[in-house]
Amino acid sequence: MMSFSPRFYDILFKSGFFVVGGLAGSMIATHHHHNNLKILKQDLNILHPPVVQFGAAKDKVEISEDPYVKEVLKYGNPGPVADALARKAYVAAYDRRLRHPAWTAEHLTAASLRPPPTDPAGPPDRSKSLFAEDEDLPIPFRARLQDYFKSGYDRGHMVPAADAKLSQEAMDETFLLSNIAPQVGDGFNRHYWAYLEDWCRRLTGTFADVYVFTVPLYLPRLGTDGKWRVTHEVIGSPPNVAVPTHFAKVVLASKPSSPSAPETLELSAGAFVLPNASIPNITPMDSFLMPIEAVEHAAGILLFSKAVKAAAKPICTTTKCELIIRKFDDAQKKPNLRRTVSAPN
Image 1 (cartoon, rainbow, N blue to C red):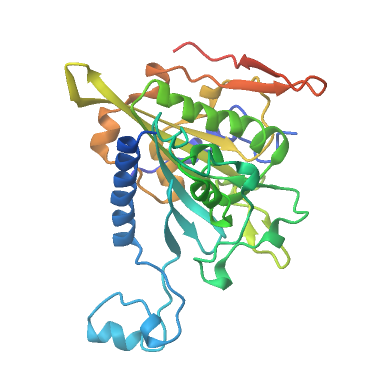
Image 2: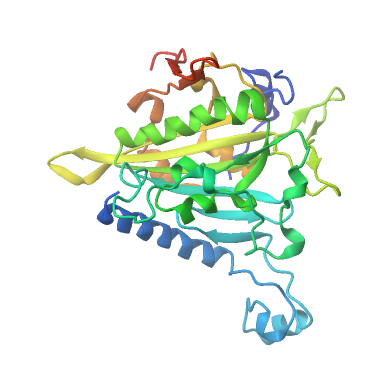
């Protein structure tokens, strides 16, 4: 397993803005999209059996046919820490302890980001979507609407509603609290984070397939006593939902290497780790670039195989790592678009 020295974390927190609190389609394409989600769901179910509430014998999760295991768990199966969730437009793992996703995964294409032209109900409308508690989760482990009430944090989408235009139901599922984590509003969720989400969508103009993983993180900070600690807020009454110190967007994008060899894919990948804090719009996007292994190490997950990582080119060398800043004039309500300054590739 790759290990990281204290110097690694020191760089995380002392460079740029990594100091916590220190910053005042077509039907064919849709079928392809669902097949990819189905494969991911199968992988998830191998790691985490489908979760049910424990009670009557018929409701208990069977994890082994071994008589000894059955005897030990005779009166109850504690169940997994993470619940596997398969939605119309994404899959996710929900962390029962933290009451927010451990990670979310999406497969974006140019077609998947367009509303189906044959939907009689018309295109999905986010104004019709409401935040809701996830009834697929056991009641004791759900995030609740009142947890966010007057918390000082936005209900931040891990999978944004704009990524889920397959149907109104798909968009509604992004408003389930199992897809939400507490985020700083002004300067982050409503601004820099939103611009990063838009950048991920715009990648579909260059790449055929874009896989996006969103990962809440809890990173240690060096104290004045020379010891490293993870400190984070918990919101709700009683305290129920943990507030991540950072969020990561990890992207794997692919396209045919040439028109004559469409079956041979060119891969690009990158990971961006942002503090859960207000970030000035002028901050270059590539200042938040981190090794994918660093995200995996911090979150305790493996996103891609070694072979995939070795084959993938740094995404900021194959496309522009540049955000489009959308500012609206209050009087005219017309968007004023400009791009962030980005270091040369």
